[in-house]
Length: 550
Image (cartoon, rainbow, N blue to C red; front, top):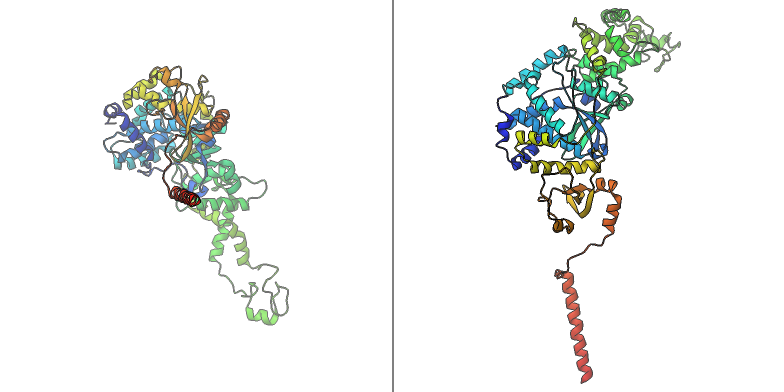
């Protein structure tokens, strides 16, 4: 990439770093239309369950790191004068720290060195779109290898595990979730469900600290779709590995699956197996012949009252044999018409959607794509790997080197950024370090409309770089003297989060009487009335005393 991260970082002050971090997070990542996953699947599933990130505290999430980097690079097109690689790294850092502060253990997964051969057309299509915007090609994995290495080193220096997938990152994420190694996947790629994921979080917002949750069990119960049915959606409506069948979208494919399940009899093959055998299915071939015959057959005259074959006037005078009447006919007959036309209609209609989809699909000589099904359903590539998902304390020297090289941060700025993260991890019980605790609650406050406590935190024994206050100031710290800008160990924490971990401190703080400053009472209209009443009573008292003297 033509703009190096280091050269950009040397011109980035600490304030510029914070501003660009916020701007990058808020920037929309759909600058370039990069579709990921089954076409239309998210729309079919509808909105997920919106959850607070703190409600997911203690969970381990597998994060599709490559997707983050691709989206960040796409967003960098609006940030002039900043390289895509720089925006990638600053976005990854910001989001990783945000997840850690919410008590979530992120496990990052990167794409393998080589994409599956079946994905070649999709990557080429995306590359052309990206080249319309810039000469750089972030979807080409060889061009992103340098950025991958830098992001991996940065995350590992934070103590976060990074896994290199053998193929697609979302496949490894789904495998980790399916085997219970992680609790969920964080990805916008719906292919993860086809790979076997059980829970997916997407559209997470660090400002509002929310994310949308989708669960496979909910998809099974509400839409009656199994994992194999989702693979059918990928075959028909399209996905990263296939353009799908022309004229069939996600909604039409879903209606087809429901129709096929209604026609499915006990002991018959599932929908995916039936579609795989479309070419050799003799039953459907016979149904095609019946459909052709039905189209060629001219519908005979039928009574408009009972809808049986015959003339209305004849039925009124002589009755209807099918209705079983000798005079007139029944407007709601007990039996359907038994003519050849209606027999064919009753046999063909239940298979109408399947026959139409089959006709469209078999125009492609390669349908169904067996490589696509093998990619989604074969887990052999992930077997035999020992995945490490444990967090550890940051490697401070490596982290200081990375932040200094890429973002022009010194050791003190590094600790100012990391101390609140470590303190929040301690509150969520996700910090692999136990020798720490809060000293005191300084005051209650409101931060971004969230009720908080301002906490004075005990200094970490490994912190060699933050300024050390004098012992006298440290012992006699009061809410008035507290300065969170000068002391990185004064941290604002959500009242809810802090109360769960330290309820005794909260009870003691709430029971301690608040010392209010003594001063002149503000002059208000009520005070004016009280003063006038007091003055009038005093004058009346003097007047009465004068009368009594006289």
